[in-house]
Amino acid sequence: MKVITIKQPFASLIAEGLKEYEFRTWKTKYRGEILIHAGKSIDKKAIKKFEKYNLDYQTGCIIAKVSLTDCIKIDDEARKMLKEKNPLVYSSIIKHTEWNGYGFKIENVEKIKPIFINGKLSLWDYDYK
Image (cartoon, rainbow, N blue to C red; front, side, top):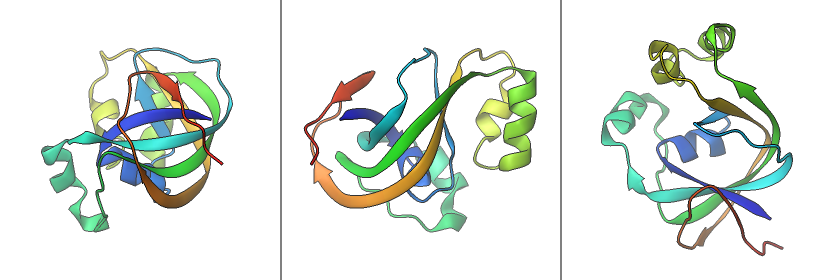
């Protein structure tokens, strides 16, 4: 199964269903089930920003299974949509209007028992049963 490694707190925001888009500078044609791997690095400034959610931030493990259903270009229209969805979660994308990247649409979130494994760049494969 495909896996994507995401820095904390963003991986936990996805696992809790609070973040529906993951952002990258590259686009993907992949659609289907994907595992969310919480990387070992932590954005401490972002952790503070999201402390009201009182989330658990495990690192170095796969924490959720989701469906990647779309890949959208981040433009002014996408920023407007993200601001309406959750201005706190998407604040960095909304504010950085010069950033040109892609948003991977995530649906059907299912938290799973953590699987401790090192992450990798891009989409990578893991034998998940």
